[in-house]
Length: 193
Image 1 (cartoon, rainbow, N blue to C red):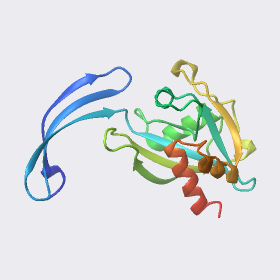
Image 2: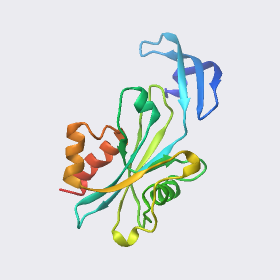
Image 3: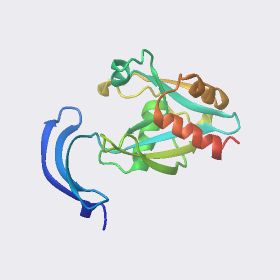
Image 4: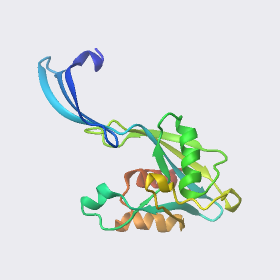
């Protein structure tokens, strides 16, 4: 029996379709003991996304960004978020998306992105599956100012950070973005040993 055999959707109701899509779903789920249980959940569909860690092995550094995130702010984070470049796929495939985001947000042309894993970021409420990439860059790959797209409300600061300092920022609680922490930890295991 697959998981699909254990789920019967009774109904879905659209709650919001402003920035992304929020629905309320009522479904029956067959438990391990064979009993059916009715559940109600709100599901936020913001689309799938991609994130990339731009790194320079020779300089032992990474490219990070700082930007304002309203949801983090209203949950008590009174600082700009330190993150890796990332974005929503929209109609693009993950690699095309991350190439565009690296240029828009950080000003870097990505020569050879490498996909390293995928993960659901908050599977209890959000449908998003994130595709994680890494790419080596150097000064010659910096082709623009970055900073994001003004019409999307982006105001992004770009900075080079020594890799060890980036890990220290995680340890001090200055980097609290999950996608960034995951990629830095992956790099610690596979790149900057």
